[in-house]
Length: 463
Image (cartoon, rainbow, N blue to C red; front, side):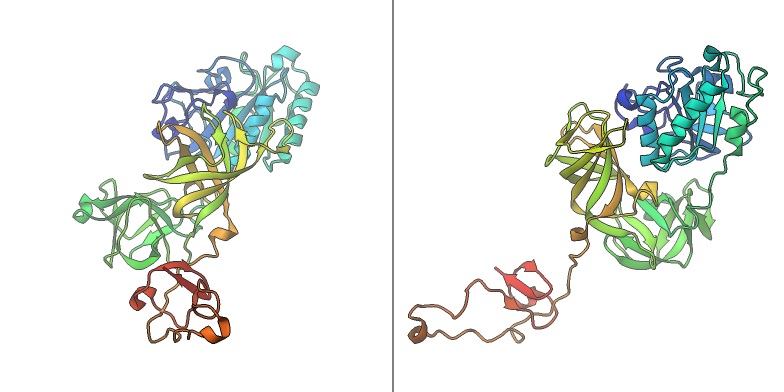
């Protein structure tokens, strides 16, 4: 099966994968097979039934899927996608195996990746003589576990990949099933395509300069909202505000009056604003949060364990920033969903940690926007991906420190303290010599001739 570059970033995740996987560009097996195409419906297929092998799923083939990962038999067309891009998921459970530990881990992953639309197929029904009680037991076991994670089931369908029962046409062996076939269940799922359009503008800057704009401007793909000429926008994290002078389709389609989420565009601003790859173009009135410390969920995939205090690279789009785990708060047991104390994460384990970055970045919580809230963790020595994470929220200590414009000069400074040897008996000024001078007004300390080393709301210590 073919694989897109986005999903090729996954290293070996066989321990948390379903039986359907494909080969990545580096010769490693990713977690879930994926080709991301922005057409039709993106589908993540997870087969935990034990049928087939690591490169094929009999049920996917019976449904009409081809070797390129496309499923054209449905009403709207489906393309296999990674969990970070999937609109819905098909979870294949074995009638005899039931909800295995592997299946529980996959449901946990679907929850973390915010894939809430799931169609459950209970395969191998011929092995239990198409017994309705077996199907009901497996379906109820799934619903009970998934409900704890907020993951529902659009439909649960008993099927047989071997004979084709309930895959494309209703089964004569399971007349007790009054629900849809697997294909009909997929086509019936309603995909909320308007959700991203209703959100504030988010355009991650992928490159600076575009031929259609004479080598100037910025280029990127809208991941939320809409952008029109004349709109006020904010460049983050620099916080500079400007207006859109021109929008050009990146594929050479000419000028646009408006661009929508999913479109790749080049944008020219009215003002000469400094923009760099990795910046975020947001609506002036509804910017993203900016912080350098977060709580994040992490799916660890590296051969070496995650270590607290070790520096990694967080990659988001074209740029990377140094990230340190401090601390690992807990890891999640996929069998029971219990949280347990842990010092490290091994390959295939899932945990929640605090991350501290070397510089602030603009972001949205992953539950709001996958593109501005998701990230990859890379090993700084090898450059290989060792984990994938989802930003949850900024820590409070990362939000209450702000740069202040200060007006401190010689005229505003207090008079020097007077030495009083008679009263103190020692040389020096009254009071602690290290006490910082109070801030009397508001500009830069550099105008006063001092170098600021610490900024607070009320004092300015100088060196």
